[in-house]
Length: 529
Image (cartoon, rainbow, N blue to C red; front, side, top):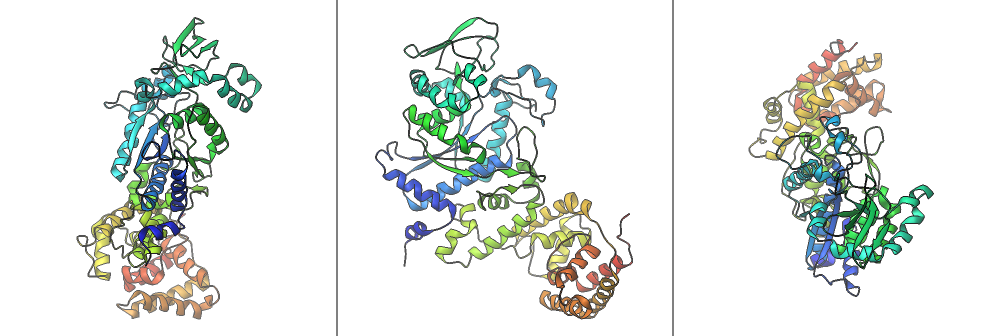
């Protein structure tokens, strides 16, 4: 029988593929020089953290956990916030945009917090929002602030090296810029000692020996500042490479929008004496109209919004699946993610050791998925909410207990949470979007016969009721188009384009109640307009 490590060495899930590359990296000369493997993930706190930010941390954690299955070498994970960046534009989702106008181009940790509370700055507030969620989810990480690292001197040695190798850095950067930008570009961005703003100005002189830069401040006065101690910062592309060199980062993933710049980051890292880390490029998240999710625009779903309607594990599953495929991330994705997570978790309980390492549940739960049972699907609970107009958990639990007497909130806390999510999601998204249509003559006849058959069925299990609906559909013109038969039920009776397996719904809601629901729809009581 293979050992756990041997099985992991063969695992095909993408985190294991990346982890194996890190194992090979350790074998290179100097690969283990610092005594641990450093995983890093970056965050730009120019706006509130969004789900894409969470996804980067979640995915990096998955690779880290896979590496730990393959190796006993110590690991660390650093969540790095670029909070010393200047606020170049005001996010759309702040309470009072005008109030922030005077603070444009100040470092984010020098901009007043528009959200109130006891935070030093806008950057500190956004950092806290990120850490809050990461802590709730239970990530094992260390948080790092660019402001702290620059001002404390953590980057000083590499910044002095950047001054020494200024010309080499410029040779990398200038070919990537247009002629106008080339004339004024500098990898160093001084912080004006007078205004506090991050300045995009050309350098008049870079003194490698003294470790200083000279430039004209905003008022035209020639000014000299050290490159150390937080007096200057680097432009974002050189900053990427500098950080990799300073911290000796082994692994960092980033979105596809960075892909063309990766060679620049790598080269600057090498110029500054570092070894470029292993990369993983993931596709971007899109909102419901196909636009890239943006912190400043506030489009897409926030972390809190997803968690209002589903457990964090469903969000982690969404991050695990096909990271190199662009995916739309909006509210309609939630029910599918919830039910897929439940299916993977259920399957995990009976899988072989090899199969478990391919199961997303292993990666979501860092190798220790809980032994939870989700006996009813989210989709089914949503449709039960729709049929019963349930506005509280007790109503849904009444149906559940009648259908499955052994199920109770106390014994199935995960199902109880799912009931709460379903009621909330139904009220906010399903009910407002319901559109009932009138049936065709053929559909009306079939639905009338289905209602009569349900009344006669009495108490019946899901499979019996499913077969009953099949037979009536086949006998009434839908033998070759059963999909249309069930679609008619969803659209005419439930007011939506899709729904749960009919038999499961009818068994849970009750055959006689389902019959009454059909008749009510056929009278036109639900029709809109």
